[in-house]
Image (tube, rainbow, N blue to C red; front, top):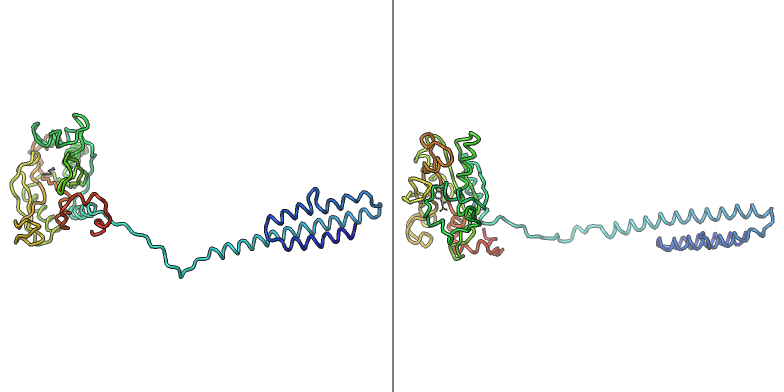
Length: 343
Ligand code: DAH
């Protein structure tokens, strides 16, 4: 038995040494030390031994078991280390490989125009106000002094949700919201701009889109006169189109302003000589504006004898189309990267 045990130890250690995976090691452990394993089978013969031999063989058996167990543990550690090493090797980064290139997006032309206009007004001390795209008829028309028969109220021009709720057709209702809030919070005077989406029931064509963007301007305070209005708008226009740009305030009619004006600027392309951009006119219309109508102030709880103000509204897409010579508004919403990438 002694020889059998010694031989088993020798062979077992050899096999374990050659093993390369955890699976192989586990198989060897079961075959050598398991219930039906070689060692167990040999030691089963101990019953036949003499009393003198039994403890000697027992001791040897334990030694063999320990030697095999130890070898198995050592081997496991070395397999583990080897696997780790191989993993690290396979994961090393080849810094000479070319990097993955991915395209970086950029701001949409509409966002860029809004940023540009916002920055100019913020430089003049304006802050940004916001309002919902789903509005009340009251804020969108009534409080803005729009007569009951104003054509813009027509079902065919406006997306009504109910009789009293609609998709705002302009950013002007935010004037009402902001003025009412300012009155509530005792927060007058105010100087705000409102960039936002508007909706009108127009079929898309080169110059119309049922969804478009406006930027509203509103100043309300004491002693705000036409001079402040003209000066602010002129400064804005010169910042946007260049310091030599001239403005023309052409009389117009809006329900919420009195007097009202459309503001034309000298063509930034030809400087006023006449070219295809200004259709030979030398002037380009860029926005609607005026002094806030006393009724509008009253509708918001502001005393027109104490306060006055001016307001303006401009179409963002129109500004972008003028600035970049784009001849079809639909291009802005088709999301063709080849188009968007140019700005
Ligand atoms: N809301 C007008 C429109 O959509 C634009 C406008 C004109 C806004 C004059 C104003 C303004 O605040 O004073 O056509």
